[in-house]
Image 1 (cartoon, rainbow, N blue to C red):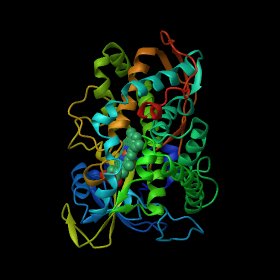
Image 2: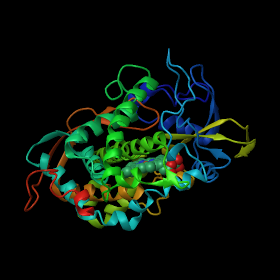
Image 3: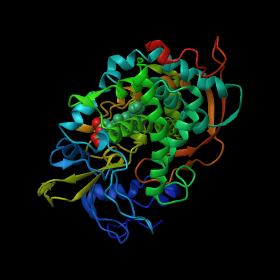
Image 4: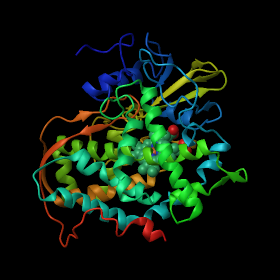
Length: 431
Ligand code: HEM
């Protein structure tokens, strides 16, 4: 491969992400030579690529100066795609203070450390059942059969979505986050793929909202359906968007951290043995997995006034893209950033972002990863890749779609059969 130069590097083409994974060499070059880089290419609306940890923190912590907008992410333009400013979704991620805070407080109480901790037993149970479902085999697709299942089950239960509809949630959230990927999104333009998935989601959630307005339950659907901002119910578009965000946000991301985490262990067997020997390392291993995998590639912000970042002049209206995986390999913050070290402390990674839009689901994602890796360390006696992993076509959220593995897994002592049955749902627990 050619040595990247500032003139030729490509950090946006989703096909490159499919072929080569994250462009770490390019980001390293940017951090070293042009940490706030005006990225101008023929098929791209130019933007500032921000790749250093300190700068991403600074931008994220000034939500008035660097606002979130409809433009959540930057992308190469597709032939035939129409550039429209019309919002596909209107929810937390593209809101700003003070509106953002009032919307966030509608569901916040279900995502606090305390609230999430109460889900521990159930999350551990689901993780165990997911592993049971592949335990008596020697090969599986780790993504579709393991890592995708836990976050989907957990969020679906929190919403009180019936088991029979989880597959639909899985398909639609894949289609939204992987709108540029033919397997997930479809064959049309990103915009059209998004639009189609959104309409299906909206149709489903409209019925759910009606139901919870008639019969309130102790679940996220009811909180949102009956929630109030500015002394009234949420406008329907914002409400439906909020449902879609919460279902979509935690799926591909947590899934990818789980898959990428196992992949990291396969490639660093010394760390795997270390974890198996000393399970007290699971919490720091999870943080290292988050840093290592950094499932969200970037989010965009728009400057509201002329300003400076690292001495570089930014003009009002300029778009900035914050590349979190690059911040998480920043040599000025992490010692030996390209070393996967499950004992790394401190580990101030930015996998969940920072500031105003800091990931609402961070506690939940951590709980899911803790449950999964604790049990994998306990039960997985050996593991290797059984074929190449397939990556999602996206430069916005990193995803591994399939990862065949060959393994030996111990059965769970006293395993209750009937993986992911509906009987003990969290929704039922909430009642
Ligand atoms: C490993 C898993 C996850 C990763 C890496 C991740 C990453 C992120 C990132 C980078 C942001 C944007 C932060 C910013 O702009 O400063 C974000 C926002 C958000 N995440 Fe997550 N996330 C994960 C899991 C989840 C889960 C499980 C949920 C919920 C069920 C969730 C819900 C959200 C929501 C609602 C926002 C928007 C917050 C706001 O705008 O105020 N995420 N996440």
